[in-house]
Amino acid sequence: MIKDVLKLLLEGEAVRTEAMASVLGVSEAEIEATLAKLEEERMLLGWRPVINPKAIAENEVQALIEVSIVPERDGGFNRIAERIARFDQVVTCYLMSGGYDLMVIVRGKNLLSVATFVSEKLATLGVVQSTATRFMLRCYKVDGFLIDTEQDEQEKPAISP
Image (cartoon, rainbow, N blue to C red; front, side, top):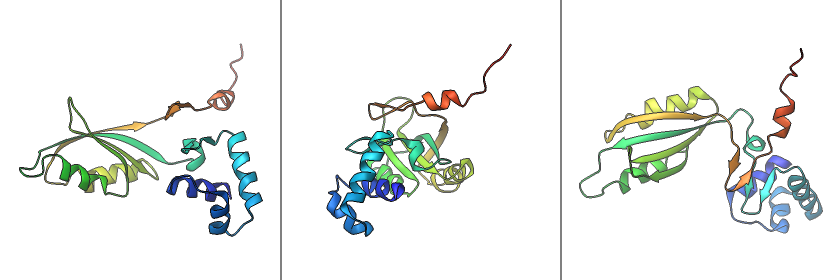
């Protein structure tokens, strides 16, 4: 139920609890209780929504990929950026100034799926000159909300003399 509610929140703008209950085939009270639980457990951090990345997929991998491209004569960077942004693996794509042209954030099930996307889809586009992939290891803040890392700290083994 929690993942279904989170998925609905991620798919659209703020959804009324009545509409969520109708889509999921449950009572409105169940939706309200689930939303209250999500807020209490800090899985739902805001109403935009801003969701703790650990609540979505435990083993999911994200990577920031710097992409240098050759702009097209009539389309500049836009057409290329829009083409890259259409890949299902791409969750964010920005035109950048500086050392590279596009910053692309990619999600995958594991490191291999991200590496395969880069080597077989992104890097093979004729306009791509180079890529540099940086895997995101841990999230501390997302969209202005601090991620609670206290629980992770307790999982470290105690150091004893």
